[in-house]
Length: 552
Image (cartoon, rainbow, N blue to C red; front, side, top):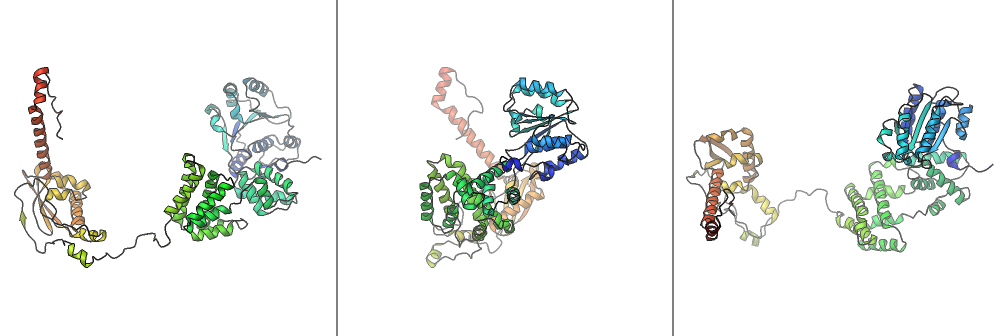
């Protein structure tokens, strides 16, 4: 008897033996048990996840001689013939080989005839997205309202190429990529029944190379059995796959943690001599960092038979979560931008050097501690001008507007340190220049109130303002509270505000308006008196456009 490959020999023949697609199995099982059958199904997913397998199991469920069931018997003529691919009422079409409209018309012409041996005539159209536009148009009407004895099952790896008019007529199921643990468990079960010895690490390598495809995993297992002489060993599987020993990734991380720039460059040069792909190396590094993050957060999730388990758990203890996230982000960005680098070596090494540059030092705290403020030495103290704080309430009256902000009273030497500046921020003095003070306050919504208020008098703890009657709506408690908070933040003490409403007061807003009007008048006068402008008016009949003159 000829040898049958594992992918065909161990193809699931019932929903119970299907691996990794529980969401699809549950939906189809409920539909079959409740006899809620759709006339067209669409299965989508990447290669080797079971689209055609599910379609054949569904065909058996529809035509099993025991009746429509989610658990076909597998022994009746219909079930056995479908498993062998010889059932007369199961028509499988490869759309990649039959893309033209004529083939689709012949298919649909036969659909009107009743099934020969089964309950339903089932059409399985694989890679349906390969059909031409004319072929899709030919099948639309039949797909929407097929005869009662016809069921369509479509499969595709690229549903975006299927017209929406077809998608809307189908019940769609998306088959997911297989999880690595599901693939490994299934391979262990198969190899155990085949009496083939294996190493768990080798199955991890095969699962990783399969990238979510069970068919690829079984094909690689077949290859590994042949390569290893009826055994599946780690060293032979690694050699078969051309898988590179990834110990260099751990060495790179060790060099990063040791702040060893020379070691990083040496390792990169060694990789270059071995002709390794630096883009693939960044991808592998990102995968490794993800595994470390998982091991750091949920250590129990790391499989006991994982070959790198000890190393992963060790690195999870050595790298802080913040540094780990930083490395991961830089690896992703480096992989994205490596095509823009002068060459792959430069892109790879710059990504690692960027990690090295941003790695926090061991003694660096996560948060800056509240250190005591540094005291100035005697030489610095002699150069400091200490602020004058009002020790007694001093009543001052303001009778005329202040045209220009006065210079601040507090002068600081260039030798004043940053922490001493912070210390003195709470001891600001005030010289009565209200308009000048506004530029130093963080007012937000209270700025409008401050601009329309005229300072009448002030002392250490109180400021008295006047506001015009037309602006009294600004005297809301919210604006007053915000203005008081801004003053308190500036002076370092609570300032009480008192407001009175008067007919006409000289506010900062009025001063600004007057200055703008004065500047505008001066600009217009300068233009009108300009000899060149006058010559243009007299010689060419030019005119000055109103409102076009703006002061500089």
